[in-house]
Image (tube, rainbow, N blue to C red; front, side, top):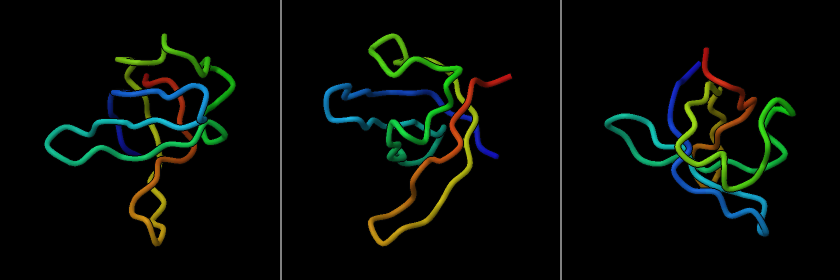
Length: 68
């Protein structure tokens, strides 16, 4: 499990990025975000917990949920 801050949400394209402290930004697709979170601009700056999945394009956040 990782904890980061949503740094960018591109609502109409269905993806965004989560910033990990001291690391690169991680891609997130809207379908990997829990129903507990709204997929809109208000998600920016929100702390979230997530798991990482590695793909050919690099790391991707999955099972994204509100941070405790």
